[in-house]
Image (tube, rainbow, N blue to C red; front, side, top):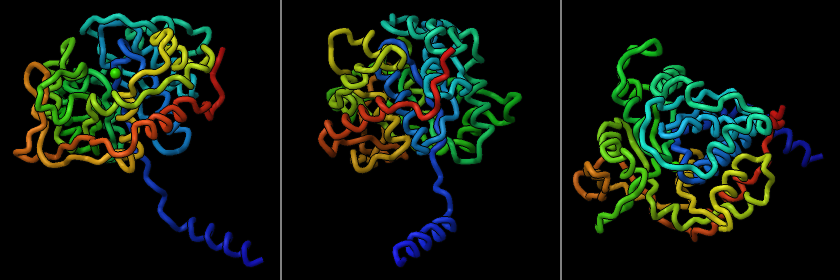
Length: 332
Ligand SMILES: [Ca+2]
């Protein structure tokens, strides 16, 4: 009897506690030349299924292939969120091949999604602006796991139907923070990293880091490099588009580095207990996209420093990527 009373008491007490605020995330991806974007989006959906995050929409930041929004929509639809807004860079921007993009994007019969090419979705700037304008002040987390052109275009945008504010003012008002997979830290040897450096990344990464008006957390190349995942995901059937993308990308290999998933994990659950953060200093990004962490002056920027064994993070990411969708799969 006493136990029942205590349970009743604690449930009653819980009803008076304020609801925990969950992050609202815009996922900005260059899903094309690597499969970790697909793993990161799968993981984001699993976290949303857990009630830990609200996904506001996705931005395709890579215009070199028509099928980025199609692959995003296939994954969204697999998790029962085929109605999520998607925006895409429409202009031809960069050109790299993809081992999985077209196969997934065009297989509407299997995945039941309705977006195949970028022509079917609005441009990235208008979707970014609409999503931000529709949210409470200071509430949106932007996660970028690719090249930074879309974010720079948002920051350089001007007033439109969605908001009278320019891009920087709109971000200042509506966004909370930015989590960025990109660069290397502290990188005194001045090595390059793909998101910051290649296919037009140079210039855009410099501008994004310079223009961004709020705080930012960087997950560097060295963080995701040590976290190998995919082997368990790849045991799932082709009905899971992320599993299929991993198989098509990896072939005989067992795992892939988890660069993009680290940014999703930080955006939703924070840095603890997996990483320490270096908060003192700023990210100096040269015009050629090479970045170095400088101690002075200090800025509202920080980067992840390894703390727990990478395998611990790998196991967590793998389990999230493999979680079955909570909602019924929308197959036609
Ligand atoms: Ca990526």
